Image (cartoon, rainbow, N blue to C red):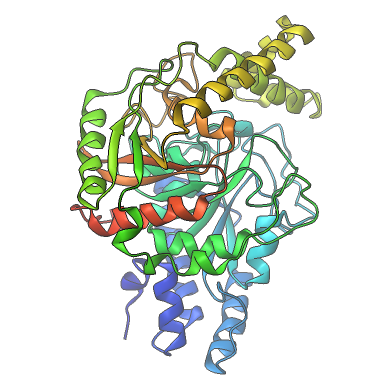
Length: 467
């Protein structure tokens, strides 16, 4: 018999195997996760809106299907969480902010719809900062979100609760969203694997040229399982690309070591903009490059990525996005927006339409530079962020600059290439993420090299499930 505490340590693919051979039931698994949420979520503040009765009823239905050997979908009976920003019928929507009144969503965004079709059990939503405009866990709607590895530290953001919840064992899987690192940053700070996919790979709403939904898990095989579900077509997203075969994501664990042999991998350490990285992080990631060399890859240092920072142009774009959201909220609720974000996005009023146009052209120039610099390489490895950690109450490690520590993420959001974070080890007891990126639409290849790295790294992870 598998005890409740042991259940919480199991990944999604392992749970599916245990369901199939009758050694564990979805009802047992759901019961264990709900009880754990009651105890652990008090400390980390990662999940809200838990649907206890729905989750158990749905788990019972799944249990019957497994007993009759007729499961429906790859996620049948798997507990799963969604970021607040992903609308799901029956769950309140805040977008991380008290400027929303928590009205229940009346649609299932594509990631939610695909999970339900695969009979995964969405039993709660995860907390996030206002409008997703912080890479930290501070929210006017939810308060402070904390890192389960050390409650005094930030879980990162903006998929803050998703990262904290999966690391703490509240669920084996979650789905976040990413505009400037919002999946990869919390995964880095919580020791997880999280993918920002190629632009259009995962359908989402509303359609966006810069935002993507992305899966979060504790290992690459589980990430592949979730990807096989959420990449499926949804006509509502006109930005989505033609769906690819999901079967490749289900067989990532079959990737041979020879896949990486003779691949040209760029080690990207110097960005030319943003916060200067902690020297210990740079040293650790440089050491991890040896894993790829030992597998036969050719690792080369990437020259400085750009001579001109894209950050002011990027800020102009996302400030305008955030301010548009703010002024379309009821006037009586607008003052509730987190002060730092309100002051920051309201400054867009000092800029002109010409400034916005110039910013967009500057970002196009930046993308051209990035593609030219990175084109020679099959894959890119880099730090996932410039710091190890920072206090939970802070909105950023750099005062008055929300995204200075996100400089390694920016190139791949702008070019639409796939990039993921995976645990590279620990410094001062805190996880450190390594970013792995591929050419646009080579999401599967990026996951394959992540799988090979995961199998060959030295350090194991003892998750902070029961701290």
